Image (cartoon, rainbow, N blue to C red):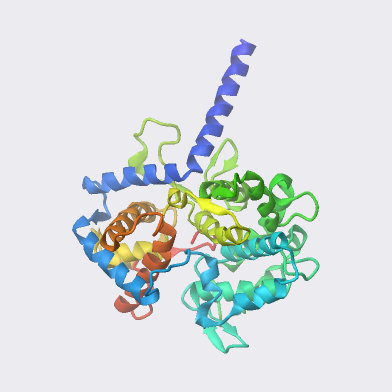
Length: 421
């Protein structure tokens, strides 16, 4: 009997490991989102219907934005690095000058430190928050404002226990909410959505860095040590984008608050949708998105390329299911609303309507990308999804929102806790 029990326990553990690996994979994101997409197209949704006849129009709109932003179609990756350049200010050149004396490896580690902290601090800022940059007199909002605020804090050594251009576990764990609020110029007149959630996320990151020495180093754990781990996973100067993504998910899954778990492992940006409950599989209702983790992955690729690595399999990762890409699909009629009431309400990120919207966005981004490539006679190697997002759907989503609504808000309102978008 004991042998059978031990066998059963081993089987259970193995099933748990397999399920965790599955829900951390881009394949799971597409498969689960595809099931919701099919369900919506069968007419079952209470909220949405898709109109694929609008695909050509959306592709044309995005191409017009791409040609305006990048006339030669030499589009960079959709990543945090773009936001640091807001206002055509050469902040990255300034950073390069300050890192000039470091070896290429330490330079890449510093950039990992910056990108990881900055992306984790990027969840929606709300409509009222602004960051005033003294040197340029720019008043910045949303993602760009958050980027510059985190960039300035990093350059001032605010995330380092030695006041260096780096981030370390000791300082993150000691960081106070007041320090973060000061760095982000938050006060009663300048409120930032989810400042408490962001602070706790950084503190939790400090704890996680210490707990995973194989990823973040034994001595003075820091996010940048992930560079060494990824170099060890490269072969013949090549590194798969999915390898970077897996490392991000393994390294950071425990920082997310109160999420779904399997065998005690926090899954991160994974939610549930009732249309999947009848599926014949373990944890059938689960829908993974991993939006911030994928965007962070995209943001880590450039420092790796600067080390001479060739990144392979870019299109294994998915489009990002956030309100600009999803807003594009809604505002241009690829997704239609069945009940106008949802425009007037604010929705939890765990709500059926938001999970459904995000799932449709993942699948429609693949379809938009295919239509764009066909119109431009380019293939996925020449125009990977990460460039279409930048060129691209994210920019187009912001543009159409500004054309349709005076404040440029997304069409659906999401209650943010500072940890998802």
